[in-house]
Length: 204
Figure 1 (cartoon, rainbow, N blue to C red):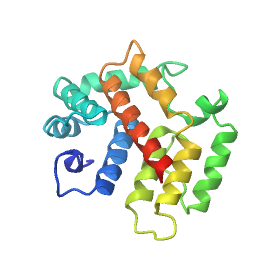
Figure 2: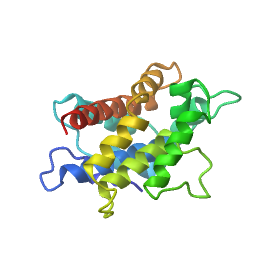
Figure 3: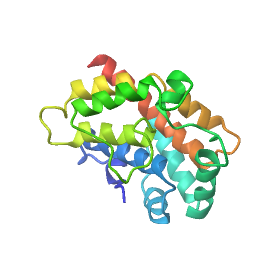
């Protein structure tokens, strides 16, 4: 289960990089599959954030977890991201960048992943440009002990090339979708976090 301890924004013993990595990991877990009741309960038990836009978005997710149960969230997840035929909201970068799945943006991403020494696990059925996979890569680039690739330059390049151009559009589509309730709160948190990341990388 993804830890939420580092997402307690007012905990002084948690470093900023640990909190960033954990938030990427949590978003990856929420976008990868419907969350378990244990994960919902863990988030619901976490303290609310402060007054910043990101902290208010975190408080919104905490409130959504308190008001949700795993069965209802699973049904919402399947309606939004699986469905019958075309998905209601796409979670793939290629869709937003080219209008199609499995297109040139995915090929470019795979090339960069190979350069980083990363590849999709055989058990993973989603393509590498799924938002959950990209969040996992960012978590790795922040938290890994790999001195060659796990650094701010690699994070900035990967985020700028493979996430920044489209994640706001995805979050907007998800936040405003008529079927989105719990995942609207996830989208708000993700959107605010990605905006903070964009600003930080611009100053790096």
